Image 1: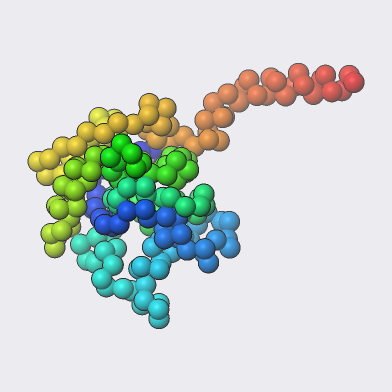
Image 2: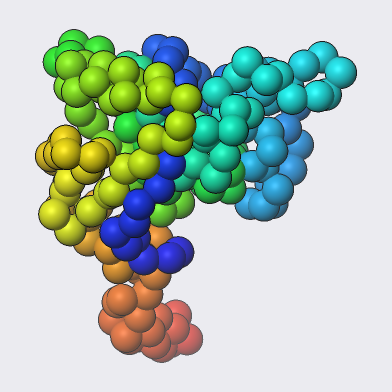
Length: 206
């Protein structure tokens, strides 16, 4: 997994709440367990017309969002099933950050979706409803909306506006170091090898 570094990217604002994993990637794309080739399937039902051509009205197909790396939606993003394919599609489309709001009662993200994002190197940023409203208003312009994300400082900067966000320290460390679950486990490789050696000797004696 690549280390998360400070970057400036284009915002893609999908103004819908409760975007579930079936909307992120419909079930017909779940036949493969390979972790590649899912980017084109992201938002497939909204993104394409019935004949397979691009739906020009969908935000991801508009010129101002080409190459976007910051996805912003509304409350409860990633709800529904636990399919990790949804996060694979988000990542393979090129998104490094996903933003959603919480009002204290409705979560910004579904828990499984949030956890899967961390495992795939995607930063989830939780802001207030008012802050997200402000970003959506900025995104209404016909030109690309650029934002700078600094995980070390925990800031999102758009023009002269600076948004601070909280992040779990353990998640922050994993993203900054580029560690997935396997690489985190391998930090204890010597201890694991020592345990295996002792355990094998004990088994051989029984």
